Image 1 (spheres, helix red, strand yellow):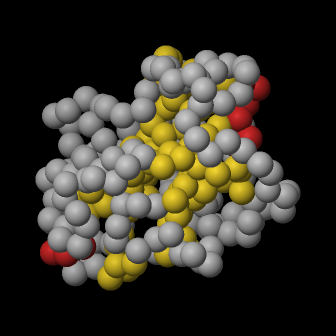
Image 2: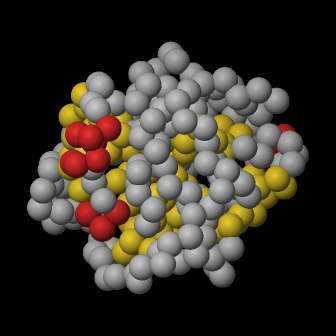
Image 3: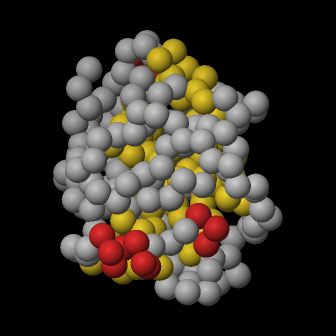
Length: 233
C-alpha cells in the first residue's frame, strides 16, 4: 500500500491515508514518558543526519563510550516553544548543534487518524546553553533485551529547518506507522524506543507505552518527519 503524507494540516504529525490499525489503541491514551541518560550500547538507533535529502539509514550504529546518569523527569523549567530558521551552513550547524548529553527525550500521546498512529518524538534542551537541531532523528524499537524490532524507520519528505533551542525549549519530530490490524503486518510490542539526535551517535532510551507496532510484512514501514519547534503540532 502507498503511504501519502497529509498536507491539509500544517504541523500535523504526519501524512497520508493508510489502512486502519486494530491492534493499537485508537484513543491514544498512553502518557508521555521521558528518557533515561544517553545510551551507548551496541546497536540499534542509527545516527541521523540533518540533511533532509539524505536516504533513511540502513545500518545500525555501534558506539562504545559508557552510559552516564541523566535526569528522568521533566526539566525544571517547562519546555517553551523554540524558534526555527531556514538555511544554515554545515559549519554553523556543527558548532552549535545539540549533543545527546544535552538533551532529554520523550514520546507524546498518540494522535491517531486516517488509519495511522502518530506519536511526537520530543527532544528538550536540558543544558545551560543554546543549541540547535536540524533534520531527522534516528530511531529504533527494541525489546527488553535490547534487540531491534523491525527495520530502521524511513523518512518522510519535507524541508529541514534549523530549530534553535534555548535551555528548556523543545523540538518534536513525528513518528507514524500504519495500523497493522488491517494491513496484515506482523507486530511486536517494544520495551523501548531508542532516539538518536541529528548528527549524533549516542542515543536516548525512552520506555515505549504505545502498544504493538508493525515489524515485518505488508505495510510494516515506520516513518519519521523532520524536527519542528515545540512539543506537538
